[in-house]
Image 1 (cartoon, rainbow, N blue to C red):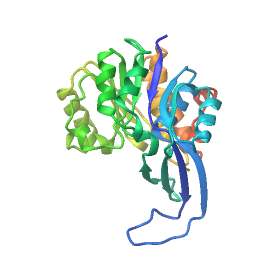
Image 2: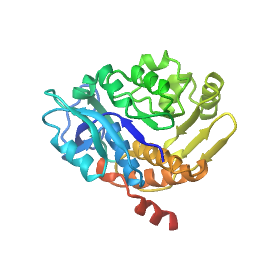
Image 3: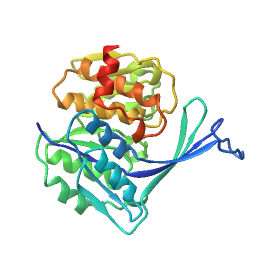
Length: 296
């Protein structure tokens, strides 16, 4: 099996549990505060590992990032390309309301210290048909995507957080574009799921679009296939890592050679388990848990 490299963010998350998301000018008290390991990159690597596959994580932490290294090790993620600097590890300030919805402020920290030379040195260890997973929470993402394309790697790109450079850059060469409705509207100008996909495939006919729709499930489409899978009804506790869990299980399942409908089903089940627990890494289920839910 080809190797999987996740070149992504590593954060220390500080989560405030609130009655509602704070409004401009408002001061409210937090019912609870917790610290977790997170970052879209770390969450997605954990999800891939818990889906049963080996994954390498490339990223950078500061001297305060020992908790991140421990989390990667405990999840069985290969840390050959984990870098360290004197800076401060990236962090996220997360507001979580009583319905489980969240609002997030990111501080890039060492995630924004990754250089093009470091990218080149790491990608030299990977070859064509190896899989790269990328988000937009580290520095030099445009360079990373181009370098991976030159190496003929398959690329799963989650363009979050959305920035102007993504809207103004060709996404040709991406294998899987994994987006939610907000990102889809930013890229296409449409809020209608079918129209989002149609516009993306018209512009980029060789990519596969995976559009997550929250409680309305997910749509997968490429130039020859169109699949939809509904979401499972669960009590929502925390949506923080739901999208990352879905991505990790979807990419992991397809990497195993499973067909798209099965991959969508497993990823959706994993995401439903993730939203039913608090936290990011701590909420991501194992393959055994997903299989148990599949039986029921």
